Length: 327
Image (cartoon, rainbow, N blue to C red; front, side):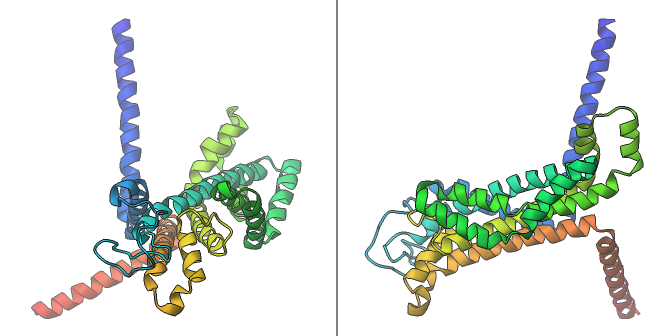
């Protein structure tokens, strides 16, 4: 009897491992099947690695004055120096930590609120839906970026040492309502499907139905809203710091642009003070946009069919050219 139980346990364990490997290979297959997602994730991973390996990439302290005045790029300082003689490359790689941290915190927190309010509002309906929909609508009509500017300015006057944390919270609470509205609309459709009715009939709890039956069918939509919030958070964080609402004593991409503007770097032609930081912001946001476009192509059947039609048309054109050539 014990041998039989051990045999069954081994079979169950191997099946669990097989399912885990299948999920891993399917996720990797999805990433590699779409070049937009692959390129976007690759660029984001590159910036994450740069931020984590900042102490290994440069020996300089980003806030230390190394030379007198602003020097152009050279072998000693490959991105030049700031007006205070600080190494620009050190500021770029260390500044990536601030922008990425704010973006990740705001996107993760906002996505969690979107799932919580959007799915529960649609699934429970009745009074719960009315109350949560009212809350969503209130946040939806609030002007997000102007409100973030006001709150960040108040925070910069009272808690300068925690500005990045405050900015992340401000962006989190001003960016979740639209995604919650979209998820609510999708959940209203999914909760009437047969598999949800079957789960309800066999006595599954409401929370398990929401998070184990409905949510997995909205993964593409959740991923898209997460990436969109990430883009908004990074752009808004850089904009707020460019306006001087961040901690200007710490290196970040927005603070680099703030000091470049204060020093009139564009007017005097010191392009190295703002071009590297601006390119980093642009490339990161473009890579996130590529991920979003790739997710749309995978999740939208119409886009998939259009892409397939374009590929077939191009294949026929190439085949026709080859046939003419060999005839």
